[in-house]
Length: 246
Image (cartoon, rainbow, N blue to C red; front, top):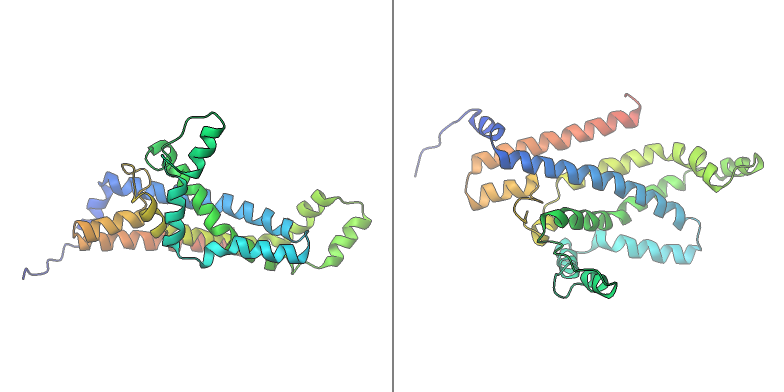
């Protein structure tokens, strides 16, 4: 049994020179920023629309959109992987019916990230919409009634009443969503395993490969320290914004 060797900060020095680390860092940030912003925007729109339809239909739709949040991540990942299949996938079937060429959704570096982003936004929109709904129901109806008296339309009410009062709730949704995106592993690993090439290799996926495939446990732990610092930094930033410190 070999003796344990203390290497100090050598792993972080190696990390600075590691092109794969910087690629995975960039991929993680890209997924987090795009999914957090677009996912929250769609969640706000969905929550507002569901508040305007019949209660029974709205409850059914909420269950439908929330199902991915309580379904096995591996199961829904395999389902989407089949939907993206080059030979018999649903999306390529639609493209062929429209007279367009099929795409290698998960095998083409150009399309792989786009395909993952669509899936990740879809998977989290139900949970985000549920959070936004709690904020919507906390807005007094009297404000909307006063707005109608002043002649506001639906867009004005949404812009000047709903959005400002939803700001704290939206920040909570952004916080949860960003943390969830930063630690995403299973969906990406099942669908692309970080490929093609390294186009969708996040920091989590890279850490898994370094630690369990190449058995560089010390380096993998150093990567996890960076991931923890990234999650902590994003969380503190959003908390400061929510409190109005910035």
